[in-house]
Length: 454
Image (cartoon, rainbow, N blue to C red; front, side, top):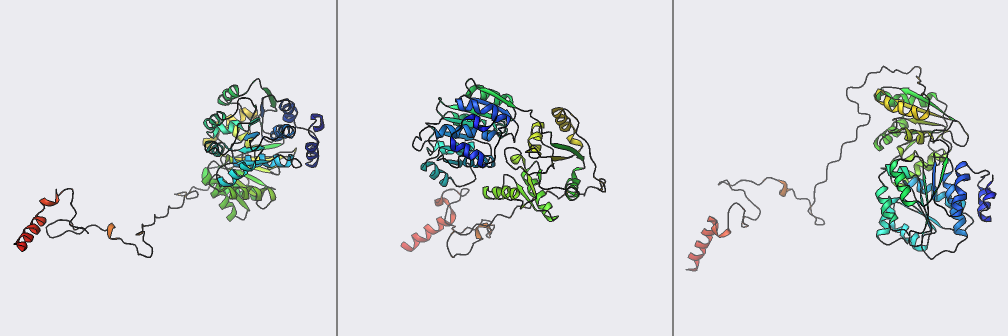
């Protein structure tokens, strides 16, 4: 089967040829006919199987054969991360390059002003993350009343990230008469229930087994936790690598590991949630172009990030679930190329190792790096991932321009001879002294004043 058999719009076929696509992937072959017919679809496939084109090509074909309806959004794609949203939007622009279909992204971490401006100018396709989209809906900045197609991409990851309540709120603002497409790598019970609620007589498409590709070789490297970084550096030095994707469990650790690799002479960058959107795009772009040989990332990069030339994936920290392992490993061995997956493991990782082996259906080989000191003692205090001390809070100034800070208010009040505390305004009443008229000093003033008047 070829792409021409789907009878897409001639401009789409021309773009497909320009991009070098020849034969559709299994998920595309199974899903696209149903999407073209206008049916709801539930697609199950692992990452890197061509899911984006499986729904984007039919959507573009449909929009090109219907009239634009003012500034209303005609197709909405919801994705869990900014990176995936950008990738989907880039695919929409490439596939629809010679069409008049406009596609924009909507997500947090960047200015809302430009997104509102793009929506006002009219957008046929909006690729959005749930949080920012919900904010714009509540502000009345996005028109979804004439939506024709809704796509939920990587639905299970959106559930893992806690987006399911936001998804349900967004659905309440959409027209009931629409086409809904749901794509997911796994099908937990919550996603299955959501599919039952929002899909109408869907075409269920399953492409491949949810497991790493056969082109990926696996290896476990047992090591004590305090020697992980040292072993990672030695693996990098003694392995013939092209580009390496290193996964850590936390954002702080991703940053620190990238810094330590940089000090060892490797061109490395980190990709984690604490970075601004510009820094995140700079890290991914630099890794794709070869500026960075190593990208150290959290699971934010495990799915949906289209980086085809990864020769090695190294799990600095073992993932929390067997499915997460498959998504991480899916970053290598793509496009019929071979790849290697190394995982640094400790004694406490044994239960997860057994779970991963059950999913794969075979044991993972144990490896040992020669000439590495596995018996090096742990330091008395491991400061490798210590966070820097928090800076002291600045003292408050007087608030008056050109005036120096005054610290009198911070000094303890001096005591007088009678034990009473002095105050800047001693005539003001104190809670423990009773009314002003009862004070002895005020009584003496009144007597002295009466004497003078007499």
